[in-house]
Length: 112
Image (cartoon, rainbow, N blue to C red; front, side):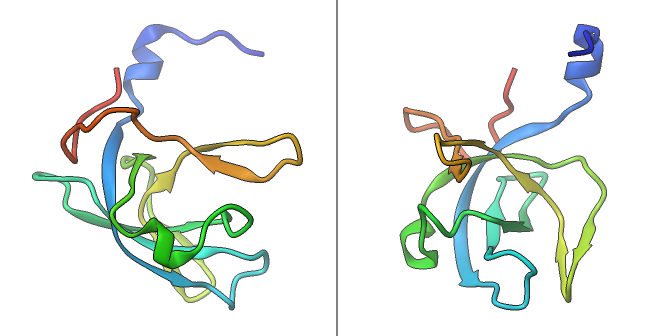
């Protein structure tokens, strides 16, 4: 693993967002869900594609708080433009589990 300076970490803009809309993404190469995440004032709503179908359904994601990187450039995924990277960690089988705050925090809160 390569060490980085703390200033490099600060370049990542990781924010709390609230999933406002979620839809299946059957056109994706790997099973995925399209997300529309509200990252609060100043950032607003961003779209994201997430390969999280093993543990989540679109309906169960509505209203859920997530963490996401909001300062990566947009990335085209099929016909969908992903504008944020929702963060997760793999479970024992390698399936993504979303990272979220364990207490109520406002949308847009920055991870430090």
